[in-house]
Amino acid sequence: MNSESSSVSRRDLLKTTLLFSSGLLTGGWASRLQAAAAQTDFGKGGLHLLAVGDYGTANAEQKQVADQMNAFAGKLGSPLGAVLALGDNFYGMMTPERFQPGFEEMYSKEHLDCPFYALLGNHDYGPQYDSKQGRAKADMQLAYARANPASRWKMPAKWYSFELGAPGKPLVKVIYLDGNYFEGALTPQEKIEQKRWLEAEMTKKTDAKWLWVVSHYPLFSDTTKRGDKEGVKLLENWGSYLREKPVSLYLSGHDHNLQHLRVEGYRASFLVSGGGGASRYEVQQSPRGFSMQTRGFNHIHVTEDKLTVQLINPEGQRLHAFEQTIAGETRILSV
Ligand SMILES: [Fe+2]
Image 1: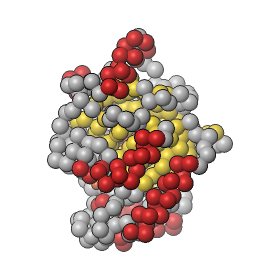
Image 2: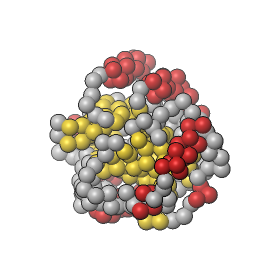
Image 3: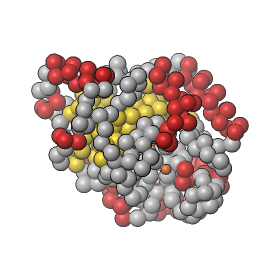
Image 4: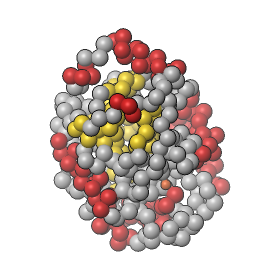
């Protein structure tokens, strides 16, 4: 913990928590914005993760974010546990040959030598999107994971779960969901199967302290051009689990910016981390939290009783940071 965060009194902490839970935090958090180097000193314990989405552009912007992820990970006191790869992994026409320059070489093994748990975005499927390849494009990404078990690229299925932590001592259970409900992506049968799987997964016993849900699509978003629109259908399907189960984080990409929102009725912090390389989307500040039209990625440090999350830009500066307890109490940290 840095000195700024430890100096915040318990009264301040309660005040922030109450503001959050009552939705009274007006004016957003952007007014506090300053640039400061991201925190890298977290001591020896805990688990370090990065999250990035919408990166498959194969351009200089993707490279800049990738290099910053590597540089940042190199400054941490312990190795990275995993990267959560949030979809739109490859824009444009896909071939298996793109994996080498677009993934294996793009993300340096120097400090990013850990599993990249990937899921599919709309651009990884869509017949109506750039490549017109449809499901073949998604299948190529699943096939690469199957054929290359030694690769950091992990995509065992369109939806899946995994646990992170020390062997035999899971700290986080992560549930990955395929939100591509549009025509030409998930089949009607797959939608039914995923729903059944999610129901079973949510009731399965786990020793992990934390439960997170991840999909390419935000359920809530302060992106100007589409707001919450893209999440409406998914909320109908998944919302009850998020309200009733102890889900602490819902992570997504799709909107090309960085956001941290809190929404009444949910314990989870809603994170949008779609700044991996694609063109940036404008945001509309709201009382729900922080949003910024920027590229970048998220860093998450996990311990038994606390999450620390940093939203980091391509220059390595943290734009927003917070801590969250198991009970869902959130405290914004100075930047
Ligand atoms: Fe997308």
